[in-house]
Length: 463
Image 1: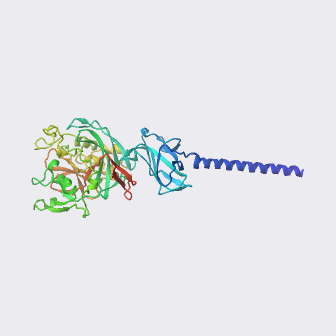
Image 2: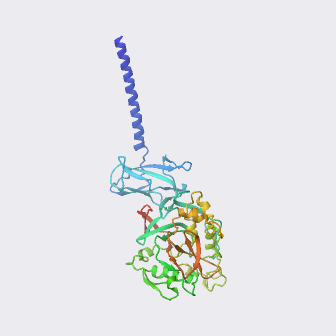
Image 3: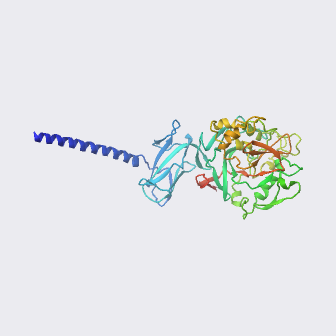
């Protein structure tokens, strides 16, 4: 009897041991699967920069963001370029023995090949996360529908009435209180407005990256002619300053409203040694000079919906009495070439740029915000300024800044953005902050950075 009991206990012990071993094997198998089996060698599509010569030493696991619940799910293969996915470089990482290697960077080339740089150790494993997005200057940027980030915005049918060409119905705009849209340009911080519809000198309707300087170059007048100033951008003093002494990094004359009546001027120092320097030759080469700056006008600013500014800016609505000004009929010269006065290197932002830079309000979506007027009818509450401007990275912190848009009823008035009042108008002789804006060539690419203020995107011309 004692022997029998001993055998029963022994059998139980063996069973427990066998069960434990099986559990250990299962857990080990899962761990092994997660650490090695999900990673594949992609010898035919990865490009490696580092001391490891054999591409077989780099293993990849692919995760794709679900559109249903925003979770990342493991995939056997890398998503195809035509599916509309981009590599989320902020989430993606490479590691060795379970430890993330900060010096190893992973990205995608424009021909959809994996680029891994900084590799020094065999059996490096890279986790690649893909999400819906687009390529901005060769860099995958996720497209969002809420919060800070890059938004797709749509427009009604809009035409460039100078040449009867139709714009795309969609654009990509950075929106929110602090989206990751910082770029290091001209050895200083600028910010990306987005991928914007433009008309080129051919003429073709295309899309270009538009950027704006983070800091103002000064509180200056829009124009100082005709006692109260003119709002003809083609010969305004601000246009000449931006495309003259500022673009060429020189010292020259500036005007401000305070000096207007005395006829005094001040020196604007945009030399390379100044705090507010003009563009250096290296960065001048990145500027696309073959873009038409739209100078359509509106007759008023009250109760105009935010989205309507986009159409006004691209129209030929101008004052009929304006001499030698831009209309559909006189934009082309006798040789049928584009008016060179409309193809300057530097300009200003538009009211629509401000409109589309909001991500929405506490109780409103971005789409609802952009349908609001920037300046409501008299005695009505300004809902855009109250609800939507708080989540707008272009909102002026102090004072106002000039825009490129003007009034077609009064030849003196140009429009400014005011953080509290939305949009306002003043004579060109008055002084407000000036933020230069420009378009980049298509072969300007992002080569480094995360788009944050601390680590902005670095740019280079790629031939």
